[in-house]
Image 1 (cartoon, rainbow, N blue to C red):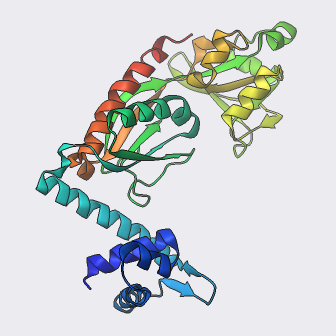
Image 2 (cartoon, rainbow, N blue to C red; image 1 turned 120 degrees about the vertical axis):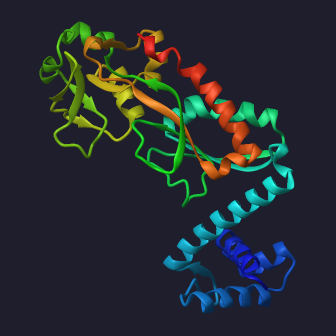
Image 3 (cartoon, rainbow, N blue to C red; image 1 turned 60 degrees about the vertical axis):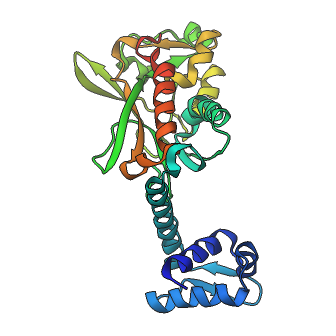
Length: 303
């Protein structure tokens, strides 16, 4: 058995966590799968799997190697498809990542439209509020908000999102409307970074960055939770505009201090250059860029 076959079996074992299950899936004996893993361990000089009579688990080295196996096998598959002309029609598994709420509001609708157009494509979406390693987690396409670090990734700008201060009309009627960022120190505020103490809100005054220690009594790690508390008349919060758009439209929230807003945060569609040769990646990137540019074009003039 060659290395590619051994790596394929090990990647399957990492998914199924069962030697017998992998054997059934690929039509080999359990002993053959066991020997393949033993051969890998011998060649690498590390223990990849811990087994007992009841179950098995990957060691830390095994978990890292499984990630590498999946990435290498995916790259090999892409290379074969491109060389053989099989990349002409989009198909297969596409892994996408985006921030949780932005993904729910903007990316999920375009993913379902894309799936309707391409019946042989499957999508696995990782919607989390952290930067996902595209290499380690086998991600094909990412949608990212904010300034991007220098990397080997290819990034296409699709728009920007604004961060705005808002409150409920009832709160403003009772406590008054702040006219300057410094006025926030006299108000109840809800911050969205519980790890940042004291909470600092960012503004732009006369072309310069300006920070205000708002002294929030309530700090949350969830934008949704902060918005919920704001709708309930508890105070002011600073969140991305797209997350409060409906509340602004139905009058549950109102924006303040718009003359002091920080610069909008850029949104990019990001992919690994080597994956561009795949039809599924190329088609999704093109579709995603067009759809998000249309979705986000209003942000620059949002009120």
